[in-house]
Image (cartoon, rainbow, N blue to C red):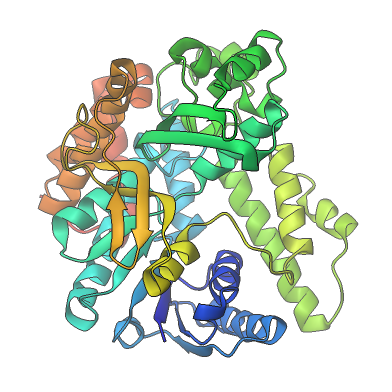
Amino acid sequence: MARIVFIGAGSTVFAKNLMGDILGFPELADSTIVLMDIDEGRLATSEQVAHHINDVLGTHATIEATTDRRKALKGADYVICMIQVGGYKPATVIDFEIPRKYGLNQTIADTLGIGGIMRGLRTIPVLLDIAHDMEELCPDALFINYVNPMAMNQWALNRGSSVKTVGLCHSVPHTARELAEDINVPHENINYLVAGINHMAFYLKFEDRTTGEDLYPRIRQVYDEGRMPDWNRVRYEMFNRLGYFVTESSEHFSEYVPWFIKHDKPELVEKYNIPIDEYLARCQAQITAWDMMQDARDKDYNVSESMIREALDGIKLMPRMVEGTVSSVLNYDKFERSVEYGSLIIHSMETGIERKIYGNVPNTDIITNLPNGCSVEVPCLIDANGIQPTVIGNIPPHLAALMQTNINVQALTVEAAITGKREHIYHAAMLDPHAAAELTLDQIWSMVDELIEAHGDMLPAYS
């Protein structure tokens, strides 16, 4: 019977999806699910949801809930991490508001850029604390990390601890489904090969599973005919320039490079339909939806679609994100298997059934024209022996060069977090493609100083 620990279980909707995935496997139906969070209220809600899943699925999982992390980790087989250090307020708001003062606009700010750097600096120490507890209390457990900035976090975990770990992201299967829809091919008929770094991996192959037909010409046709979705113009433009399609969304990718978000060229933002401050709107929408669900449970009434849309009115959210929020609220009590890899890994390791997933692992000559030690996202075989990455070899040189601009920032942020040296934070920000394209050196250094001061106790002291 597997002991599966959720750290940050107060992320109730995400925890619900993963618990439903796990307990949907008969072989895992009697697992022990341990929910841990520092927020007692949200933890209590997640505990209620876990018992509800048990009832709906007819499973017999043992459900535990605690605010004591060490108690939760003792004897764990799998640790699933979904924390957000600092939360929406104050941390995320700080990450957006201070750079905006300097003319630096962002969309998501959780992976790269100055927002990604600061999120990494406040998250890495907490992840390492968890990992060090695991070294003592469950040294053989697998640490399954869902926390951004994924590449930075995994790099730091692999440098700073001995735990077995894999970073997971849903951008690979999500984008494959989106492209399949764009070219009108059933997604289950698609065979693909992806490699790179998290949020900047590329489909090296995208073909028909049965016939072997290369489907890239059909994607090219979508671009040539101007049929790309309005929300996906950045990625299609990059496909036009690079010849390969990237895994992460246009709103994300636009801030990983220097070409799309420029405060003195607002026409670019309009042309490529880039949602500035999108993550702030997403957070506001999630909080609104969460409060609505809580109120409905407390007062015993049903939430309607019109009520949700009215509550979201006024939040500047991308239309597809509005639809996603509405769907998540309306389907809160439904349990359908998600595209997340976490349950598949646990099931394969427990049963020996072989599967392929995409994971973020340390580069050990896996992608030979990226630096060893950095975190790469590649296909991995999963079975009773654990996670076995696929050796890719060289990727196209222009893709490797583009990734290297992001790896430079990741490396220096990890160096700052591991060594405690402030100089590496300045250098990470200096080399960030977006910041470097917009700000002077003096502005970058002043912005970093202001961000560090505003973070206060959320960051360790830097020398």
